[in-house]
Image (cartoon, rainbow, N blue to C red; front, side, top):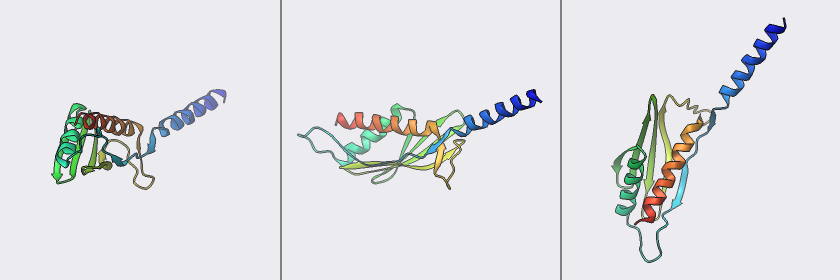
Length: 132
């Protein structure tokens, strides 16, 4: 009986641990394009910065149309797809689709690694924008 209780506790602990990998999807909304005060950003410069930033991190960046770039990151069996909307003043990174990341549309949750990838992409975009 004691062995059964220990197995049950271990199973419940494992389930609780596995369930902790889902977090709310993080989008980056209306982030200002910050460059030095003597220059003004252009939409072409912002586009170039976004594409270079994504490419430097392994994202495949594809211009969908003016002001929109789709980014796809593939790591092993995991795929994250985002839509980046932008103009000369601001940009946003929005979840679009994923594979093998346990996305739950009802709860708007996803594997915790996704948010780290988005934060890294955002930081890389900011670095590229600072060099405009």
